[in-house]
Amino acid sequence: MDKMQVLPDTQNEQDHREIMIDRVGVKELRYPARYLGANGTEQPTIAKYEMTVELPAHLKGTHMSRFVEALHAFPEPLCGESLAKLTEALAGRLQAQRAYIGCEFSIFREKEAPVSKMKSLLDYELGMEYRYCAEGGSELFLSAQIPVATLCPCSKAISERGAHNQRGVVTISVAADQKLTFEELIDLAESSASCELYAGLKRTDEKAVTERAYDQPVFVEDLARNVAAGLRKHDLISWYRVEAENFESIHNHNAYAMIES
Image (cartoon, rainbow, N blue to C red):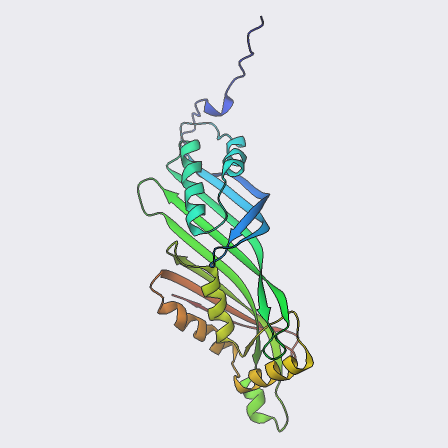
């Protein structure tokens, strides 16, 4: 009976340059995932992963296949707590002192129009990062892009009829406790704008949201400050960055504001 051929493990060979690599691994890895919402329901999605570990100076390389193995073997749906578990499991699998996993994915939320009660789905772009350190100081970062509508206070003040409005996007990035949910960030951004967006509206709804925006005018500066004020008061958030961008309707450029804690 032939003996199984033993292949050389080149990655575990000694590297004589003695230079540690801070992060090595895989990027742009797309994989099926399930998002765990705040209400406990799961939503299928496709996530794009970046997975890396620290490589000691004496080792020549890491084992790239183990990153995919770790992801494929992990059964839990995506949330802050599960990403932390996956990152720690990756560090153990590769015997690394530090490990990093980041992922980006889309989710949909069902929204009800304000008057007709018509239901439709609106999409949001989300991101999570977990930075694991065996010596302590591990951190979780969440990010969300929330589409909103704003109406210009200046236009309303100087115009005899109407005011110009536009769609915009709020990007929230936070360092947070694993208990913080994306739904809280989405709700904060939408309530900070002139009006939230909907995929489906009847005529009665269009009237309602148009008038709501007119009654709640905000500059891009107001939008950023409104969101930052809510984040600043949140006990589960230790750091934040808010970016507000309006896709101007009467200019050929965008208006932008950023606040970082």
